[in-house]
Image 1 (cartoon, rainbow, N blue to C red):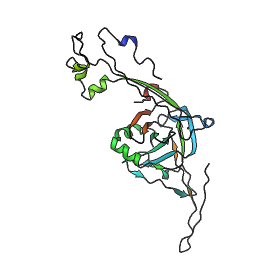
Image 2: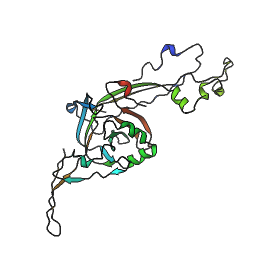
Image 3: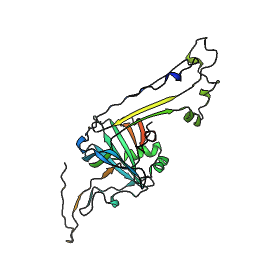
Image 4: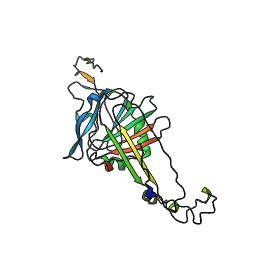
Length: 277
């Protein structure tokens, strides 16, 4: 999955040490998407522009958890039942354009899950990212509710490569890259006349999301209240989670709360703008 992490010209006569680590994850959905339902659908890049992407669909996805949130990050009250005259995509059943919805899809074994954070607005991803904190994310995850969801999410593969020196320097991690770095205890060899220092940090990620990674009946009940007034018929509400605009996703270990991968799917026509960390 990761090829040519470093090129031959990455090494010089001064290169003394290379430290690497890897993480590999391959998970099958607890409930696979049906490949025959995957079809090309518009993915909105702006209010006016879109591009067609292969969109996976799963109706009444049972291995899912769902929640919706307002612009302030508070839980939006998603009903369990609605007036039978309302469609599942009626705007009143979802937060306004400044809010967002969240979906968790289980992998087999239920220990690992993918979580998708979807802004209601096609241009809402930057604001959602700016409002995100570890504490907010954990609170939102804790409010996810197990229920059937109608899911549409792109089938995608992202590959990204980062040079991280600049990022770390912006966090005031600078000494490690300079001659005054203190890595003396990494070696006792006398051949190193100069101190060891970090010359490069490279991070590369590959994420592939497809159908494999895995009919309900509705009843209408008519009731009368104590004074004989007729109540409108209701039916179960199945939320629609349609990721047809830029979103964030993460792969998480439910037991340890560790985030294994985190990224965004933003502009499928330009691979470098769809990032994974």
